[in-house]
Length: 132
Image (cartoon, rainbow, N blue to C red):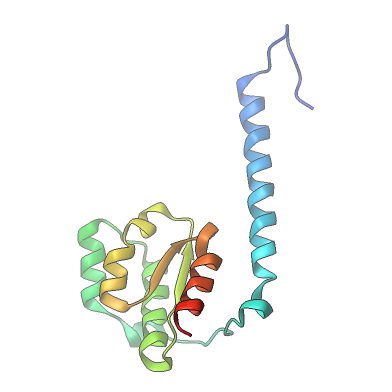
């Protein structure tokens, strides 16, 4: 319960409460989405060494755009390998706006789809519908 002082709610308390609510909501939605694994026929992880599948052209294009998050770049290398070697069409679900802004660069260099995490399941369903 927010404390009211002279008929006013302190802004910091309100923002803290709102942030907690948004986080709890996001986690709930994320967990609900993760429970759809069986329904969507998702493929389990396959260990891949990113150093062995490095894509210098992708890395250079992302650096030129200003994206330098090596952890995500390594994930992209591995997803690109899965697309090429296993025939998957990977969807990288993200909440990182900078990564999402690079989605066209990534698609052009790898064929990997980058989608906002809130819409990734819908993108997957659309991809499956179009591949039939």
